[in-house]
Length: 393
Image 1 (cartoon, rainbow, N blue to C red):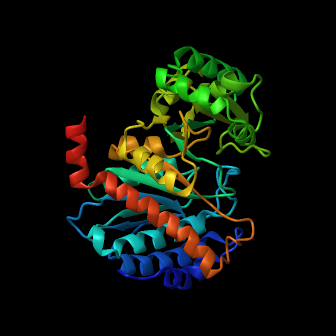
Image 2 (image 1 turned 180 degrees about the vertical axis):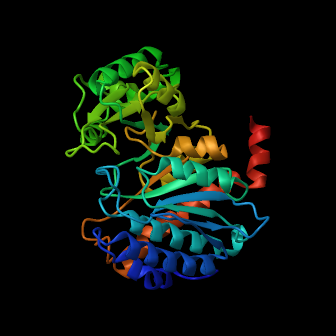
Image 3 (image 1 turned 45 degrees about the horizontal axis):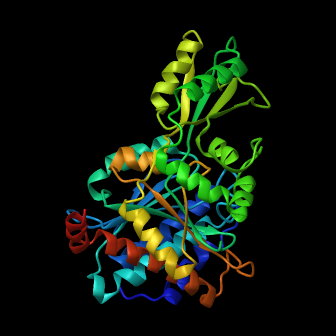
């Protein structure tokens, strides 16, 4: 339980050094070995959800209740992640989280309270499998907070706290008689008409973020096609407006979809309902859902948000609070399956650090920040803190 950062790096280095193009079977095998070792070091039970690309869980012993859930991936993402995270830094983020948890679990001051860890093949795909996994293991994954530590390419003056995330629905269209472009336009138009849009607190946050030139430059980097307009209008469009895209396969096959409809959805849109709506608009033609990431919100008073805000004052000039992340995350899946949203935390990395071969002193710096985040999260969810919060409210 008292394993230090250097020992974690030594035992996880083979896993970290795997290149992006490694065949999935080898990557999964090395991930299995690394997590089995980490499970023993942390006193957590290793569980594998088998599949072509397996999901791995580290869980408290039977009957144990976790203080938090950590989320990570074991393979490179299928979609671009810059500037939200460093390309290919997913395994380093996982190793950093494990080492940070090891430091906090070995601290006598917190009693070694356990956490649960969910490690998926990729965080931007596999939403349906993730939802089933969380529901199946709900009793040992329910916790007051859930965090997704990420390795980010630079440290902003103020750390970014996102109070939610966008959602995404991917529909496969088999019916050749369906005009995918007309279906996209109709679905986006209906989503825009049904959207709730920003709430009163959102407008205040939009105003503050829009006045920050660095934040607006960051937003522009996240968008493939920056929205017209400037300031608050552009920010509101990027965070709250629905979008649609049609992707046609290069080679068509009768046993595969003739087109893919990708929808970035709004707050009150549910993936299952959108699937049924698309089928109605298509006249009953075959349409299936490949991905369903619900849109999600995190209250600014939630322990995860409060832990991030407090910790940001230790590692930067404070928090830069956004109404929502401008990208899709699994937060909505966590909220619906576990009742706890998933909060992001970016750990910045120096340009000199090789994500596959970090030096011990570099890894220690990253893991120490992960440990600090975990410490603050535990403080916000301790029984004493929860009793105090009720009295204060």
